[in-house]
Image (cartoon, rainbow, N blue to C red):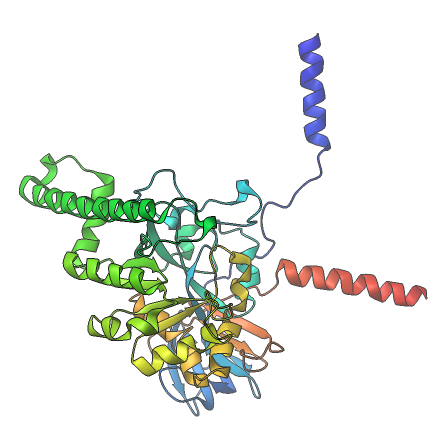
Length: 440
């Protein structure tokens, strides 16, 4: 009887809990059913100068773009006079879909246990019902590279489109990248640093040796697979590393300081890896090295404080301009560390770079075509050109201005629902204060 009473009490307590929302209310877009012609707006192709004109897309791809286009008989016409048409913004690094609330461990699926996880795919852990996805795309960000974290070799990053019922729907087929937290080359000497500098150096050397041995083991495994075929037992970790050794899969190395960047570049050159630097705080100081080896940089946010006391207040703001002047390909990410909720601010990071030296065109490219080129998908997204995906949006002003709003958005021709939790709360509390004014 006591057991039955305890069970009933537990069940009643569970049922009495308030119902919590488990998914966003926004529905994924339907496949495009008829051609759509956008007329009279300022088109920003990115691959060329902006102009006032028309854009036609059908079956998920851009069919034509020009100053004046004839609409097919069955086309839907959108009057965009006085408005702007942009390609979907592309955040080159995020953990969107992997984390919801940083302070709540149950909503964070960022990393796997263990230090070496090249076979872990961030894509399959993406939550398509995340409340942060509608919030992010409402500001024009329609594509992102979602990456795992933790350990030395974190796993495989994947490009996702911010609309779909499942992670399979959201995936943009591509190589993505193998994410590595590169061992810090210069030990910290502060009393807050923990282990002594000598121990930090030893840890760094041990991790680099671990990477070398892992790649040597992968090469031996690849030769065995080639000679034995199906008789060679499959090792999931080493199998995932094989494309990185052939250059098919880029290696994205998290590196901020001069020595760490130099270490990553030297290692990649000796091992024959195709490298992308993520972070790049000191990248201008390594410009000659990066340019020589044609290594692009994904900047980890622009609107940030300097890292060192001796750096000027605008060190981060001018970083894109200095990389541009040095001839180093770069993209701007709006996600410092795992603050996924801040991804919606991506256009304002680019705007800050434009305010401190970049032209508007260069800043726009840094969040559209540049990440698409760096990640190998520029043949499909990143600019408004005939034959590319109709992944674009219409705004009532230039998106580098915080007052501008996205009015309509499309991903591969599917119209995206632009409502979000933020907008629902805005409507809710606007109504609250409207009622309060009436009561007075």
